[in-house]
Length: 247
Image (cartoon, helix red, strand yellow):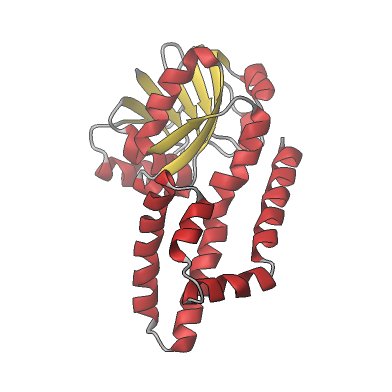
């Protein structure tokens, strides 16, 4: 497959780390950015103007507000858009393609650990998942509504988990552990817990760690008293509502 990545900003350049395993051309208007990326990826073709889309699988990674002002020529083999708040109906009006897909990667694409939500034309499902699996785990969803829900779960929750990590670090420092050591623990712990959750229901993992009268259950009691669980449920609702507004 010939890929055409349009836009090499923060997310586009993060995705490029995984996408270089394909035959890929990158379009980026900033000469400074192109020069930076050429040093990292000398075998990638870089352009500062969008070519004819014929024969390309286009990955659209521009700012959503820029879409109305860009002209596209030709018909892409497929379009994969990562534009937030831009439904398939708008993409179909603006860009000609045989197949249309929306995808929402998250910031972990920088380390090829993104959890990417994907939906669109079923006929291009296999190819879309193959492409997006190069930046982490790609999960196919059945509708744009599911994509809006998953935007909070996969796209926004890294920020929420970062707050959890920061709070735990602050708690450890408050009790006397050096900040560097606290953060070292947290980085490793998040990786380990992620592996455990692949094979265990969250409730079972919680019970696995909570012994009668122990430290974990004491901490869980404190979290329940502060309504932490309810706060995260409300955060998901807020993210979903905002995603619908943007669409």
